[in-house]
Length: 420
Image 1 (cartoon, rainbow, N blue to C red):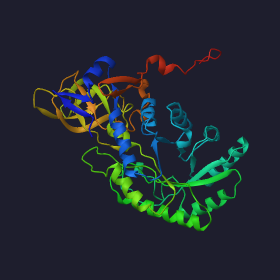
Image 2 (image 1 turned 30 degrees about the vertical axis):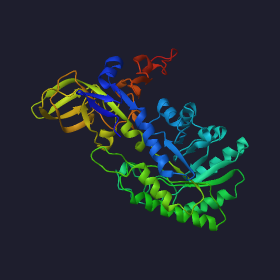
Image 3 (image 1 turned 180 degrees about the vertical axis):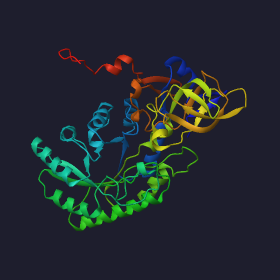
Image 4 (image 1 turned 135 degrees about the vertical axis):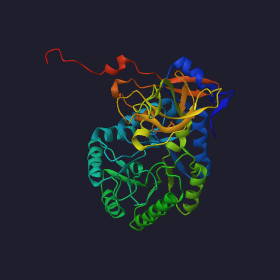
């Protein structure tokens, strides 16, 4: 389901023209389709059928409150990796008992906040973290619900920077370490063992790595049962990819149906942590061509969005399709680099891309930008972060204001009693 379609030569999000949004909001801006978000979430729900489950949206993919609220209205939980993400999720209306806390570097303050909120479970990733969580729980007079993230050593066949399930990665415990950790946690009066977690990577477009990892987790669950440790949750993580450039990943329904089929003899609630596969193709980044340039060697479209706004091309050499918001009347094309205003050679949105012949002032839509777009943006070069917009049918709302120059310095202070 593509919520971004041309009508009479103008690119629309649902029933709203991106050109009209640009005229009212300015550029650059992120634009999200509420219809797409809902459809992708419901595809996961359909895959589960009557199976006990919990769909925890990966907040790191897109943490805008309107996005989280939209998913919360459908019954979504949240997969979080920081206290700030927990704060956002709760403020957006996600029930704490539907929140799982992942991540290798949880602080004592974050643990305490999560315990006070009453989250579903902590996905613990090291023995030292376990000891710290026990100490924090004891200090609060609470019992911390724990799962352990088991590293299954499965090759997810994705970019090495977003692979998380190999032995060389920083995430999780080996199966041998995990068994020892479960034994320790099961006898700790400050902890309650509730689940097991596995996450092998992101932007995975084949089914086999997921199913291989699930079989290994299933074997772990059986070993734990033999030890007298019975779990309530089996968290299979996230990582399902989307189509950026012709990839053909399984649909959420296909993926979940295959997992449910393999879990028929398991009584536990299945937890899944989708992020990109829900919001990736729900969003675009709209930017304006400031200048065109031909240096005799290459041609450039210099736009008003940079690597600080969308870092994936520079960070991962990631591909994002780029469309003209207004289809040009001329059929001519040219090979160009689409570059931003940041003072870095690595500041590009596309390289050697064949695009329509356009002039300054033309609008471009960088597609598939709904995941790891705004959440990874920064104020590098003292650039205010862009506006975010959500479309609801034939209406749109600004769901995050564009930052101002005053916003850039609002948290800073010049000491008056010292002189440099």
